[in-house]
Image (cartoon, rainbow, N blue to C red; front, side):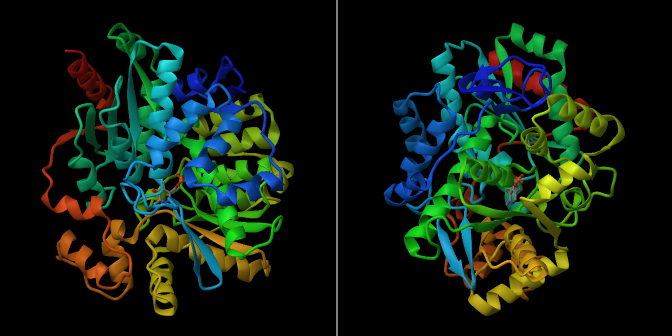
Length: 498
Ligand SMILES: *Cc1c(COP(=O)(O)O)cnc(C)c1O
């Protein structure tokens, strides 16, 4: 299977090369040329398999240039590495009348691990397969969770180094500590004096700066991305939609072939897009419900067909969704239209005018699959409190945004399909907001006391990666402005080649 650009002006590559590149040469995103199809026998067959085996099967449909042995090695090193705290990797729990798909049992306690434990394995295998001699420098812009998950995934992986930019003051204290204490010989963490979109735009600008990339190439370094614009980041996420369905079948919650709904707390549109791929491949999915916080640019888009980023940016208690440019939407537009010229045009309008309008016909087509709503911080807190009172389930703010939107969907439509709420972070990662929602005053209380306070109210123990932050040393001190990110990259690159 080949991969081509959503904007139609770049060469077609096999998946190994697309994963090394990250972004297509014309600025578009790599998309598969065809959508693999599966039947119910395939899905039912997943029930008796481990998560690793499920992953190898699903990945094999897309990464056709990797051998079965290579994929087996990759998924084993990614998931069966002693760093997930449950053998199910992505367990499904029954909570009230819904199911919750927990994607945060990996080393950094957020759903990013599902993809970022695997991407480095896919990438280093790709470097071997293609005989690539250059060093790869991964640049990441993070709203909090991606950065740490990428650092953990890439640390000390040969031939690859990684540099992470995060918005100063735009991540939780725990997220910041997780990143600043990162160990590894090939890692750098730098704060940017701006918001997430500034950091992401900065990284995109660096990828597109020809002269800068040529200068790096002279040093034997090529840039790549671990953001969800990289196909190797997206494809691992398709797996857990299948895995969840198989587990619901095994539990007898649903019958084979029965359609279900997923509500997904959404930022960059990567997680929910993986669900869209699963549906296109034949997974029985009725609706994908896109849940946002006050940065509700996607809610408006999915209701009106107008994507308009010119709006106030809010810092919310679900910071990993504080995003105004959802990069992966470009892939959805490509798959919905098959028209690269149109997609390229919309992306140009977004860049130049800050908005684009896909028109009523395409909107209607998108709405056959997607529904959207958003939740304020206040309602998110109520949701965490109510859910705890009713079920003793402790939801993190991102999960609570989704839970609350799932309820709005059910009330608005009366739809009775079984609902899976995708849970994207451990509540311990956002302990302050969660405790406030549970009625505990947190002002002036230190992070580690908060972890203990939360543990006193939660059946799940504090994840090891968070508990151990107590004693770890701060190793990264870099700060730069959005305008000087390139200098910071060059300084790190030069330090790597000295
Ligand atoms: C990244 C993230 C999201 C948003 O996922 P996208 O793929 O960017 O839509 C939601 N919740 C948490 C906790 C995250 O880390």
